[in-house]
Image 1: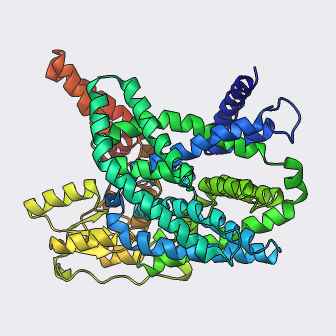
Image 2: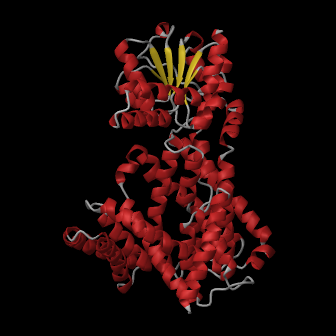
Image 3: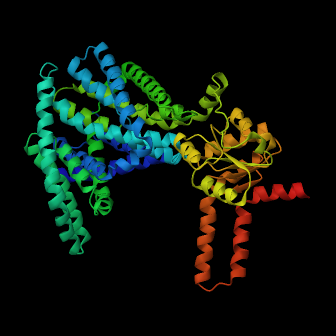
Length: 568
C-alpha cells in the first residue's frame, strides 16, 4: 500500500507513544518523537518505507503550526508584561545564542553550524511550559504570565530565524543574503497585507454565508497553505508565508472560528512532523555520545536558567518570579526541531550534530516538570540566605489603623471582590500583593497595600499580622496557598485564616495546616449551577438548600469536624 501503510503504522505507534507520554505526565511530542525512533531506519521492528514522502507531508505540519501561531498572535496579551517581553526576550535570545555558539565552536563545529546551534538552544518550549503550568496549578500567576509572554516573542523569533539562517551559507556573504531576504520578505508582507485585508474577509464572508463548516475549513486551510506556497515560489520559506496568512487572519472577525477549525488538522500534521523528527534519531549514536550530550544538556540548562532568572530580576520582578522563570524556561523547545530539520536539509548541520541537538532538546523537555517542582524548596533556601528587603507599608494607610484588621493576600479576582466589599463596609484591611502592575493599580485606587510575598515572615509582620483579626488567602496556586498558610500559622498561631483552595481535594491538606475556613470557587459555582437547574425543574427551594448543605458538608468535612470539636 506504500505511503498509506506508512501512515497507518505512524498513527498506531504515535497513539501508543502519546498515551504513554500522557500517562507519565510528559508532553505528547515526547511520545511522538519516541514513536518515530521506533519506526525509523535505525531500530529493529516495523519500519516506515517511504521516509522522504512522510517528510514532505511533515512540512505541512510545520506550516500549520506557524499558521495557527499567526492566528493566535495578539499584542494585547503582551501589554501588561511588554517590557520584559519585547526588550528582555531579545536580550535573552542574544545571550543564549552566544552560549550555544561558544559551546559548538569549542566542539569544532564551524561558525555556520555554531550559529544554527545557538539559535536552536535559545528557544524554549511553549507546549511543555503550558502543560506543566496547568498540571501544577500555576497558570495565572505572575511567573506564568512572564513566561508565556517571553515564549510568545520567542515563537515569533522563529519566523525571521527560518527566513535568515538558510541564507547564511557563509558568514562572509551573510549580510548581503540577509538584506536580500529581508527585502523580499518586506515586499511580500506588504502585498499580502494589501490583498489579505481586502480579499480574505470578502472570501470568508462568502464562504460563511453558504453555512457549511466543511467548506469553511477547506477555505481556511487553502488560505494558510496557499499563501505559504506563494512565499515558496518567490524564494522564501513556506512556513513564513503560512505565519503571515495567520497573522492577517487574526485581525478578522473569523479568526476564532478559524483557529478552532484548524487546530485538529494542525495537530495531526504536527504529529507527522514530530514522528519524522524521531525517525532521524540514531539511538546507537546517542548512546555512544551520551557524555557529550550530557555536558551539552548541563550547560544549556544552567546557562538559560541563569539568563532568564537574572533578566527577570533586572526587570524588577521580585519574590519567587525570577526563580520560577529560570526554572521554567531552561529547556530547548519544539521549534528547535523545526530549525534543526531545516539546517539538516540545507546541509548546514551534519546528521551527528542533528542527533546531539535533538537528544539535548528531548532530555531538557523531560526534566522540565521535575525541575519546576523544586521552586518552593529553592525559594525557601533563597529567602534563608538572601532575605528580600521588605517594602514599607504604603503611605495610604497609617500603621495605627492596623488593629483588628483583615489581611488580604493576593489581589486577583477573588481578592478584588473581597477588598471592594470591605471598603464599602468600612472594615479596615491591608492587601499583600507581589505583582508590581497590580500594586500600581492599588495605589491608583488609594487602597492600602504592601508589596511582597505572603509566604514571607517579614512581609506578614509589616502587615501587622499579630494585631490582625483575620487573614484571607486569595491566591490561585495550590503550592502558594499552602506556603502562605504555613508561614501565617507560624508567625501568628492564633489568627483566624480563611483560604481559597485550588481544588476540592486540598481541603484536608489545608485543615492540617490549621485553616479555619476553606472556599473552593469552582465547587461553589457548581453548587449554584445545580441549584439553578433544580429550580428550573420545579424542585422546592427548601429541598434544594438541604441537598446543597449536605453536599457542601461532605466536601468540607475535615474543616467542619475540627470546628465542632473546638466548640464542643
